[in-house]
Each structure stands twice: as C-alpha cells, then as structure tokens.
Length: 210
Image 1 (cartoon, rainbow, N blue to C red):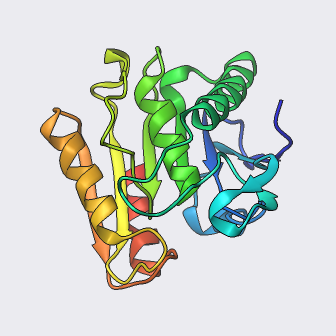
Image 2: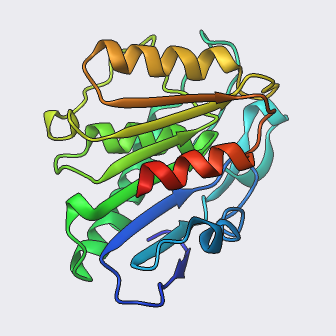
C-alpha cells in the first residue's frame, strides 16, 4: 500500500477524502488546507506517489502517479502507469471501508497529475462514491475510457485557472464539457489564477463539499 498521511477529525469520522498531490510534490502538499475546509467529521488521507523517472523532465526521478511524455493533447499517455495508480487508490478506498466509512461517504480529490488519477479512478470505480474533485487537471479524452455506471450520478467538481502555464486551461474546460455531454453532474469553475489553488476556489470547494 502507498505511504500516506492520515489527518483524523476532532469528532468520529463519518466521511473520508483521499487527496492526491501533483507531480513532484508529496502528500504534505495539501495538508495545510484541512483546517480551512472546516469538515469536523471528515478523515483526510494524503498518499505519497511513488518515486519514478518522468520523461518530460528529462528522466529525473521524482514523485509521480504516472509518466508524462508531453503536454500536447496528442502526447502518448502512460495508461499502464495510470492503471497502477488507480489500483493503489482503490486499496486506500477499501482501507477506509474496513474502518467503517461507506463507499458513498468517500471522496476522491486530486490536483494536476493527481487529479487525472482521481477522475480516472472515481469514474471507473464499481461502487458509488460521494464525489470527485479535479483541480487544475484533465482527463485524456482522445481515447475511450471505460467508465462504470455506478458513478454516473456522482457529483464532480472540476476547476481550473485561466492563467495556467502547466496544464493548459483548455484541457480542464474540455474535460468538464466532455463529461457534461455524457450526462455527468459537473460543477465547473474557472479562476483568474495560474497552476495553483486560490481563495475563491477554496470557497467554492467548501460550498460544494457541504
């Protein structure tokens, strides 16, 4: 199982959020957001991605959920790596179920590369989840992904900065529009920001989670 950080709530946990960091970061990256989100019955799980070589960064070893060959929309996608990441996240979901959290009370969230895995895993998972948040991210849409009908009605929060110079804004917008066209319940927000999280986005996340 992936190494991970657990932040327990002050009251008994009724919900869980598994939050995936971006390329080159680690599980501590979004830990400071927990107090700001103000969810007293929610356990947070922040996994660390494995360390591996990343092609787009010259083969440098870093924490990554999968390899990235390029940022062009037609770049080769590391489907094997994404599938392995999916299995790792499913292990964490099942761990929460063993602790007494129902599938429908578990959220997946991810930023950038972590958002790819969160969306991919959540939409393919065979039990309905509470929701999926994809922040400054995308889904590779030039290949058909076998989504599972169990999560057809699961709420999706997708948000992106219109100044993003890492994951192009267009990628996030296309992902939201593509999922909406397939009947998914997408809440789409865009902000005047770069590849980051801003206060307005935090406000919208809190509203959506509550």
